[in-house]
Image (tube, rainbow, N blue to C red; front, side, top):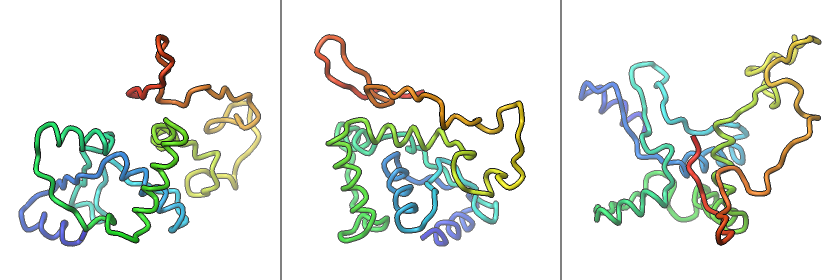
Length: 178
């Protein structure tokens, strides 16, 4: 599919390709890559093609699927079924989507926290020698990378990142993160 997109873009003289992936697609891709590909890799909002000739953008990258569905319904957009991107029955993306939906039911705010985590990576606390030079790491009086925060007291919020509690009725609500 990607090859067809790049070829068609080249034929049209286009250098930018906009795709309709949203926040939930990005999170699902992260888990698919971790569980089945052994990679901590997601789907960025903007990506240059390997040959450098095209820029792939995902304008809906920070939008929730449910919000897009609600907006489309409100605007009465026609819904065109998609069976290209792993949404077919019995594929792993569908299983990951169900897992995330279940997590969100039992732990409201977890999806928001996962997406926030995708934007707050600490390479020095992972294990990728290509992202952080562990081999040549030396003692220093200056914090290197994010420093050794592993033993610091972690403030764990009572409510996950991305949620607030309404003071009037104690309902927990999702908030937009900057």
